[in-house]
Image (cartoon, rainbow, N blue to C red; front, side):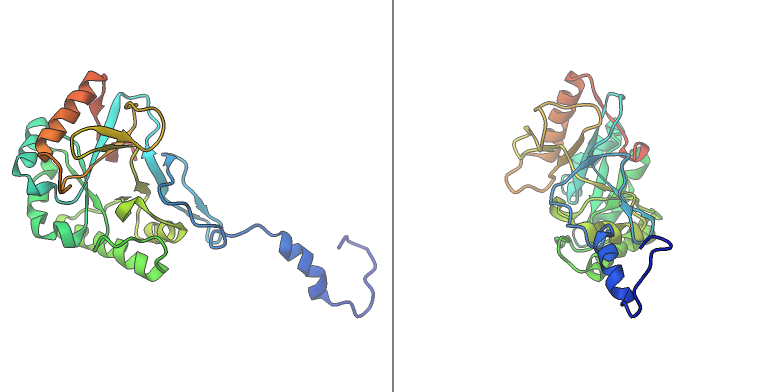
Amino acid sequence: MRRGRFRPAGAAPAALLLPVLLLLPLTACDRPAAPAGHAAAAGDPAQDADRGRRMPSVVDHVRTDDPVVFLTYDDSAERDPAFAGLVRERRLPVTLFLTDTVAGPAYGDFARLRPFGASLQNHTLDHRSLRGLPYAGQRAEICGQQTKLRSRFGVRAHLFRPPHGTYDTTTLRAAADCGITALVLWRATLDADGALTYTRGDHRLHPGDVIAVDPDHPTATNLTARTERLLKTIEEQGLRVGSLEDYL
């Protein structure tokens, strides 16, 4: 209603407010959930309109001109004893996303890799698929593993990989409340036979690509052998392995 315009006596104020309410923007809680596998480049975090909270970025690629790519592993890497030797020998800055129920018995093995460049990050307590779970359940999975990593290693993890790469807006809110600054997906995957497949774009590595290596694939060849072949491919393309923590 414009200032000074006559309002008939007895008109209901609520009726006048209805059109205004219908034109208000949706809040973060009202927006549709992000699709599974959605990814964005680093440096473009979402904003929670309700609370003015800075939400985690969702990344499968980091914007950089540096000739680096990032090697990430989800649990179970310790099951190949030679892999730890490769990390130590090459001082590889790999990122290990750990689930407590999977990696818990081998936390000591992972701790011994930290001085050689390995980064230990969050992959939930129980590897439950988070998409569609209520906030309390998602927060318990993420914050619970934050507590485990802090108590075992003194690590305050700020990177998180949702199990199976699926998430929704509730995941982002829960992750933010647990101290996470980025959800890390992947643009390239190292297959069981050692070949690279890509989730989008052309089929070659680019600076800033995040590579996911499945260390426990039932039909996979030796993890160390696959990683060594991947390192050769990376070097042939004029790239090197970078520390994801240094870029996110």
